[in-house]
Length: 155
Image: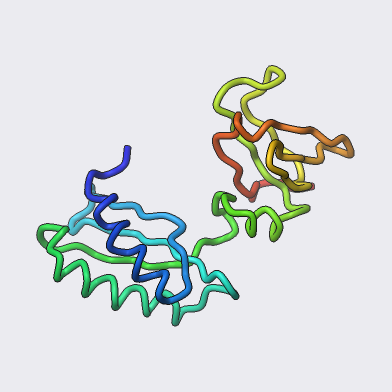
């Protein structure tokens, strides 16, 4: 379940990261910690995300959040770049990770499976294509809930 402050935090952060030519990958607010932890994942649109990118976002976002008083009380802000375990969402992700082992979760069973694994072959407007031991499987995009890198794959 998403924390109710996430939409406000996202609105504030979006314009900031766009000015820096970055994009927000995810925002998570963990209130079960003391102090609460706000995690913001960012990605550079033109090159590898650098420590400098994360530092810039951290400084600017912290200042904006404090001025807006969106988060009551103390909190910890953690800005990072997504690792290879990140969920694939953008066209760039699907191009960059072509040939990598992935896990595909569908919203409902497709051909008697709700989870698929194989190597990413690509996607078009209608489908995602994965290679399963030499056989190409086509999964309709409207059925896909999530696509992520399979870090546990040994093949």
